[in-house]
Length: 149
Image (cartoon, rainbow, N blue to C red):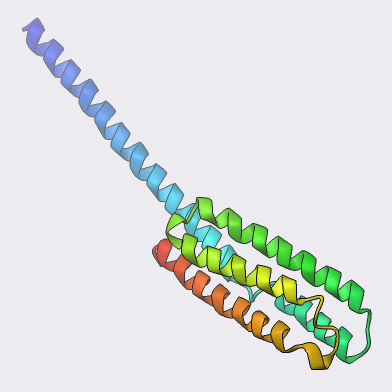
């Protein structure tokens, strides 16, 4: 009888530990998925953060504003956006190719800032800005898919 009680007690303890383990694992997975989803929504909720600075840059060129200050602001925002995109790699390995395309587009756009100093020299800058917008939209779609949305 003692042997049967001991077996039942051991079975109950092991069963409880296994159930607790599965529950903890499920909660952990839910928390990870929620964190990933929140990250994606935070990233995609607004328009490209570069757009307002690009607008200020165009206004400086057209209105003869402070071009150097506009260049500096735009270049800083591009660098910030590159850093934000790189941080996404740790959570979204599946989206790495789209992240790389976006970072490359940002880098190429940044390289064109110094050459776009008047309205007649804006072609490359405009094309590269369009590429930034396009690759960001592709990245957003990839991130949403990776987050299960």
